Length: 146
Image (tube, rainbow, N blue to C red; front, side, top):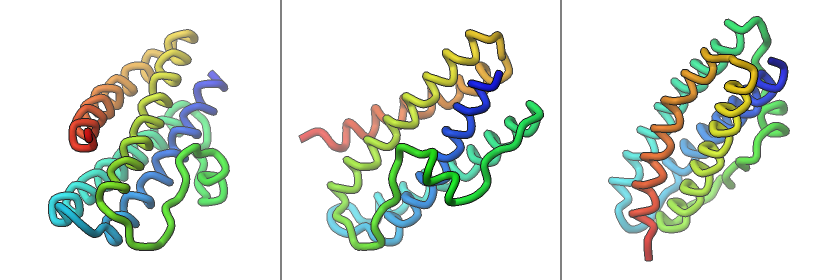
């Protein structure tokens, strides 16, 4: 079970950094399709805020403590913070696609780990994330095709 909690806390960290990053990009995006991307980024970070709460509460329900500081989140995340500067929509979309790919890989890892120790509650919870990130990646990859 400990491996699952470690993985869930790493996922929680990825989500926290991703949320802040998406909001930063929401404020700083410029270029082609500004209105569409600005709006989509808000949708993404609103969804991720809900996922953060769901994962943290799941960790608590398992009898463990979720990470809760920015220092912890930064040190446990593969996703890196965005610089506080203007960013072109094309570059932003490539980075966001990479970051959703990181989230997808993390939930695959959690799914495998949960199944191995028969933690079916975690496994079932992760199914929704697998579908969600898979769909987002498909859509983002369609937009970023050259």
